[in-house]
Amino acid sequence: MNERELLKKYQLALKETGIAAKGSIREYKRNCGNKSCRKCKCGERHPTHQMTYYLDGKQHSRYIGPGQLEPMRQAIANGRKVEKLLVLFGLEYLDMLKGINREQ
Ligand SMILES: [Zn+2]
Image 1 (cartoon, helix red, strand yellow):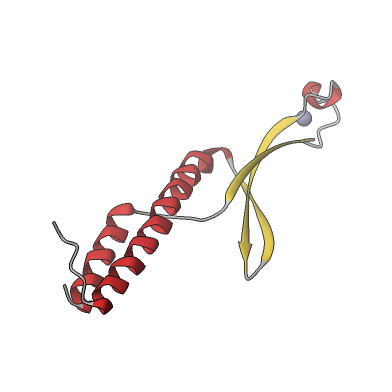
Image 2 (cartoon, helix red, strand yellow):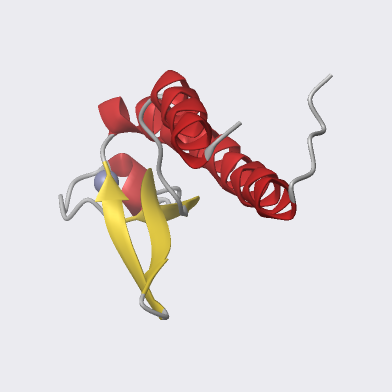
């Protein structure tokens, strides 16, 4: 396998993985601001989600709406697959540079 074939192989694998993200989803409770809300009055409050992530060494977070929760969970799961692909990509590249052929 040459460099071009190796790149093509991992580009295809990346494409098949689909939308990917890196971060973690955190659930917390918040007050809705409605003074007559029963859930807030009794202290139960409302479950809310946010994604926390690191960018250039700094931690950030973003609100995730109800309809966005499952797609973001999936994207984060795909992100783990992408991270694994990156490791394998690097190892295959190193093998290629060494002239080792591990293909079965
Ligand atoms: Zn409320």
